[in-house]
Image (cartoon, rainbow, N blue to C red; front, side):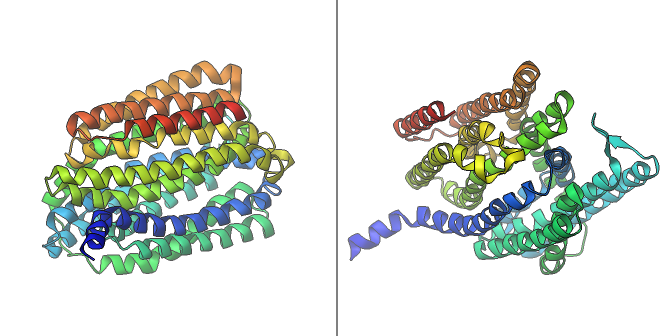
Length: 448
């Protein structure tokens, strides 16, 4: 019995992370799977140009979410672990970052919406109307940032089931609105964008009310200084990361027709199924990583590497299977207009796999509060991505953009390993990493 208890204790942390990742993943799998199987409906109603508009707006949405959020949701998690014995102080912190975010939106985005509307602005070389597309995008940014604060508050307390339910309900409502607007009212790209907005908004209203009950309604400048100090390097890092991840769509819109951008954007959306699992695992891993590292004991290395090994096995299998069956499947699944998505998909899936190592290797950077290094990591990767896109897109189109993504993702994983290892010399299973990369690379080369 003692031997059994010892084994149970040994795997307690990995099992805890797996439980959290499983609950996050179940919710996200339901969301992505349902969204995935809705693709045949969307691709037979929406045109590649519609998908191009959606993909182009996603660039602005992600970048603005980073800027407006300013890394505050990460600061909220970190502040909670440092002061979880003083909940009124945590409540004051939460209130302060929310007030700051709302004021920033009112000061910057509201005037921009009015100027864009009355000035009849267009965006991009393709002349996408500012109103209604950018108007709904800007309002969605605020809703998304506030929702991130709510979700973060559940994650930091490891309430995995609550996060799953929030995400699932939000998706179901977004899907219902999108289907009604796209299929029945024929609103095209605008129906797709506004459907997501309405779904998140309806879930945010009651969940934010519960979240705000934890507030201490007193604004704290010291809390704001903490959030800004933590968030500034993070937001630069995330901004560089967003540029790194989305600049290809801006450049594709500049060099190619919106329909080509639509093909590429659909491929990115499908490859994001793998990214969903990676993100879910990381969200469950990070709180446990902080707890393990707080013990200041090298014995915590073992559960960390156990978690990593489990993750690597799963992602290796998922990537290989995706590459093998994805291309022939998508030729039929995506429909005639989007048939060429199957050609770019293996590249995008491989890029997602290569970049996924960053999430584990960069953990010491966040723990030791060396987030000032992050902008240099993501900034250098963004520069590489931009340079390669300029070189490859004019002659190779969307395949060139995907190759640039692979190389820049490889760079960010290698550099994050180098920096993270200097901060904390973790004994990663190097042979296992090599075997995983080798197998996935062979499968990729065989099936492109």
